[in-house]
Amino acid sequence: MGIKLIVEQALQDGYLTPAMEAEVGRICDAAAELSVEEYTALDKLMGALLTGEVVAVPRKQFINVMEELVLSEAITRVAEIEQTSDSSLDVGDIAAYALNRLPPLYATTEEGANYQRQRAREELQELIRQQVSEAIARYLDRPQFYPERQAISAKSDSNVATQLSSLLKDYAPSYESQTN
Image: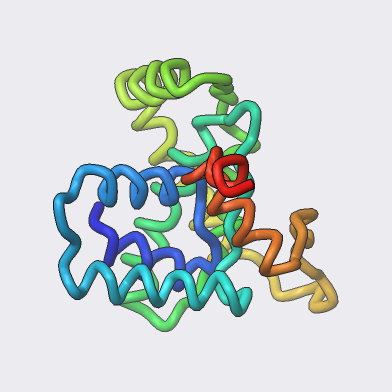
């Protein structure tokens, strides 16, 4: 996935996941020179991070690889449905429903996460698709009650400067110690 697509996804979702952040970093590190479109996309992303339009999801000491696999499948399926119908679906509700019916796949290292991803693709991809499909069907068939229902708020710091500082520390961890 290129920088432009990652930025579009982050703007659409309202958050920048650690995986998206890492991919942008890999692209920037590997490229001898970025295109004007890529610089424009990065500028748009930085502006969105500064205004709070996009929130950088903090890195964890461990991850449940199943979350990213289910979220990816749910986003793909929801986008397909929303393009061909008037339905508006909540990716969070759909992912939570599916995740509650799937085994967790935790990892604490990148190697472990890659192993879990590969294992899930080989052994669980069809089960993931089935659970996301069932979640979508349930979501579309749900009654419209409890209008006062509110999403769980993120417990991350909403201070934009703190989020930006955290993001920059991930990419340049020794910068501040070099400038002192």
